[in-house]
Length: 323
Image (cartoon, rainbow, N blue to C red; front, side, top):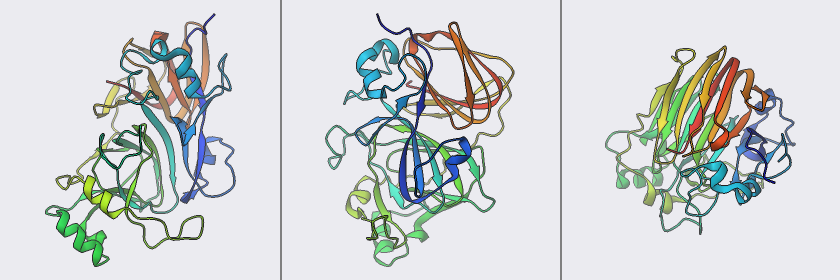
């Protein structure tokens, strides 16, 4: 007999990164040693699979859930992907230091590993130090030749849009946009299920192995969209309690935000699963057969056939689905 659909909570897969820190401990996670830059909350990728921690499927990886329940749980759209994997990868990122200046390819780029899609993503800033900033896009008039000259002359930073950032800000980063998170921010990231990054610049930094980190100049230049000015900042802070506000829309995901102050009714659709990220606060997720506690830093996968559910408490919630 199959398992009746219920909200799945996941334990993150933690990734040590040269730019990481220990900030994800604030969400109650027991981190492994070292500078932890990423917690893959909902992941079905060869480089990391998150596991269910609640209910009848506890201990199973998202890949096993996909294989067992497929379209029945993920929906008619949410179960479709060229490589058979779950279509999204959802992360928490602790940027204790600047990330490399980088760019991601679009679908179909010849340099992608077999089975790997492109990478369009969005960031929701969970916290930011007073002087925190990000890099998003290129200054006006920067073309490939100008970028190549800047790289050769070690002045790539002159070509980039650098902007201040605060908690609640939202950045939509289509594939081909040059970007970098910088020191002092913690973000939630919703993205295509890809782990391909091309580095343009890394501050001359050594990796965790003590060797210079690899750059990918040719691939990065090949995939960069030089028409992208990086004006992707939206403030997500002004959201009326009890209402869903659209933050980002792409062919791969639609993400909304709600400020929960007491019961907020919601419902799934047969087209797609729903991913919930608790950005701040705490509360509960209730459905016909049960309830789950939810707190900042938690990630949940709501199966498409679950139907009606209620978010309750004092919390800020991000909701994503496949459009």
